[in-house]
Image (cartoon, rainbow, N blue to C red):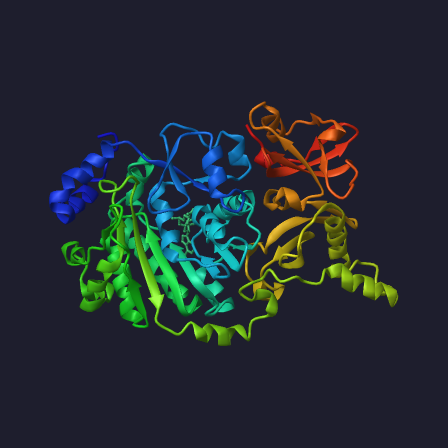
Amino acid sequence: MAVQLPSAFLERMEKLLGDEYPAFLDSYDAPHFAGVRANLLKINQAEFEQMVPFPVRPIPWCSTGYYTEEGLKPGKHPYYHAGLYYIQEPSAMAPVEALGIQPGDRVLDLCAAPGGKSTQIAGKLQGTGILVTNDISAERTKALAKNIELYGVRNAVVLNETPDRIAKAFSHFFNRILIDAPCSGEGMFRKDADMARQWEKHSVEKCEAMQKDILKSAAELLAPGGTIVYSTCTFAPEENEGMIAAFISRHPEFSIVPIPEEWGISKGRPEWLKQAGVSEKDQEYTAEAACETSNCGRLWPHLIEGEGHFVAVLRHNGDAAEMEVMDAHIPASEKMNISQHRRPAGDKLSRRKKNGPPERSEPTEQELLGSWNSFAASNLKLKSEGEPIMFGGNVYLSPLTKDRLNGLKTVRPGWYVGTVKNGRFTPGHPLAAALRPEEALRTLSLSSEDGEAVRYLKGETLAISADRIQRIEGAEPKGYVLVCIDGYSAGWGKWLDGMLKNEYPAGWRWT
Ligand SMILES: C[S@@+](CC[C@H](N)C(=O)[O-])C[C@H]1O[C@@H](n2cnc3c(N)ncnc32)[C@H](O)[C@@H]1O
């Protein structure tokens, strides 16, 4: 066998799987399955299927997911840099599908880094509602923020917090919550031999305590009638059926929504709890609750084309109408559909100027935001999206009010649109990454095929004649240009006298 598996793990799996064990074991020598997920924030599905530059076939449980051939490098194509697809293990696409997201939902992804499932959620929200995406690891939130930006997400707030602190600020606020829990990772052994080496008998116990705490906070964060999806990439019954049985025993107001047995996805295995030596007393679950966990779903590497996952859908039995009552206490800017047109901050500024300037030398927040408004007015065709707020010299359009984030470690309070320095606004890369070409006054399309797009992604200055800059409303070619790859936004360039100064950020470049 290619992977060295821990003997305690093998003994347990043999005992639990019985007749299925030889097929499970054989899966460790079978090919791996790789996948990509189309990013519907930037491309529609028909276009994706037409343009995708490598062979793909659909993943049955994810409408936007596709298998790719092993050994391909989908990250080495300009379309990856334009955020047209996310590279994701196929079974990891199942939990978000089970969350049943609807436009306008308020969604929390509690254990989100590096952001595979958050970008999937954002694709389903299509710019409506709110996505709060969090991870406890400061280091890992860097990758999370980068992915939120690369995939053109406008309505997300990125936090680096503990779930209990989020629960204090957002009590019963969200109607969908994803817990892609930290786990002992047994489903990753096929793909990552290090995971198998690092696993020890006590890995499961260590994870159980974390999972229990995260579920407790999630119950405090969920609005009446809402849904929590709990998932892991491990096989251990303690972290799966055991964790869920204990949760619904403590919370009789929740029930488990059955996952359909389709495409090789199989039922939860409550009978394993006793076989694995997990007693009702240890995990504090009732026999009825344990029985209900057969409604959970398991993805096995010997039954599906993927690595393995566990998924539980927990529905709060409360009345969703109660959420509307709660909505009355939520500021208008945080209401379900946040895309209402707002008065630009500059309006307030110009009114104040008519009545005389404020008596202080430091520019007010409204004045700083005014420089964003004038940039937007002269370079973009953008309908107002979210609340413009200042955060450490940077301007964000946020789906939440600033007060709501007070005291929380906030990595991104919203869509980062740029920075104000000495009264001048410089647009940020995430603004460009999320813009549609028709939202920019000047655009330039580079081809993915003739090497020009790659030269741009490497940070080179390009010689570009004025007639290649597409302009609307008779704009001058000089100024900020939205650089697109085959028509999909990738970053900024600044055009002057036949040269395009490259504004693609150093840390993002093609290497
Ligand atoms: C399985 S990974 C998440 C993968 C992610 N959902 C994705 O699809 O890209 C679990 C994450 O949980 C985070 N984590 C661990 N303990 C946590 C806690 N108590 N609260 C929030 N996040 C936690 C880890 O830092 C890790 O990034």
